[in-house]
Length: 302
Image (tube, rainbow, N blue to C red; front, side, top):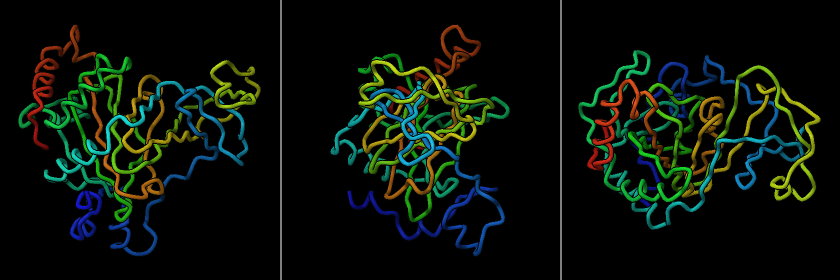
C-alpha cells in the first residue's frame, strides 16, 4: 500500500501540461508568475448535502442558512472496502500511467475518440480491466445504476506534490450518456460545481433542524443569487461512489481544485453510451460492439 501512496521522484519531475493548463512542476520550471490567469473563484459557496439533495450556503457567508435544491448528484459512501481499495490501486499501479494535464496522470480503457469530428476507433480497445468486473456488478445493485453498462473507464491519479487539479468542464454528450460514475479512492476530496448560465437561483431559508427538516419541506423562495457567482461544493469521502445525472451532468460544470488534493487520490470514472449508440439509435450496431468489448473485462490501458 505504501508503494501506491507516494509518487516516485521521476514522476515529480515530469509535466504533461499543454496550452494554458499548468501544474506545480511547470510553474516552477517557468519561474515567477505564469503569463496566464487562472479564473477567479466564485463569489458565493454552497455545500451539497447528499442526505437531502440540497445545497446550503456556507457558514459565515452572505448566504449562510439559505438553500436551493440541487438534483442529479448521488453519493454512495463506503462503496468498496479498504481491502478492495488497496487491491484496486495496487493493480492500477502495475500498469503504466500516462502524463496528463494539470499535474494528473491517467489510464484509459476505452475507444479512441475524436470528439470534435465525432469519430471513434475500436482498434486497440480490449475492454475494461478485469478488476472492475465486481465493481460494475455491484453498481447494478443500486436502483439508480441497475441498468448502467459502462463502455469506458478512465483512471486519474492526483497528488499534491504535482499540484494536481482538473478545470471546470462538462463531459461530452455525443458519445457518453446520461450518467457519469466515479469511484473516489485513497483520500477524500471536494467536487466543485459551477454554471455559466445567465439568470438567478431562487433560495429558500432553511428551516430550523436542518438538514433533516429539508426533507419535510421548506419555506417559499424569498431571495436569489446570480447563477454565475455560485459554486457548489460536493464532499466526496474516501471509497465513495459519485453519480452525476440530469442537470448536474449536463448543465453544471465539475472540477477538482488544487487546494482540495491533500494526499494522493485515484479516481476511476465510468461512462455509458448516449442514445445515439443505444438500441434504436443511429449507431446502435457500433454501440453493441463497444459494449461487447468493454464488458469482456480483458482490457489493458491504451
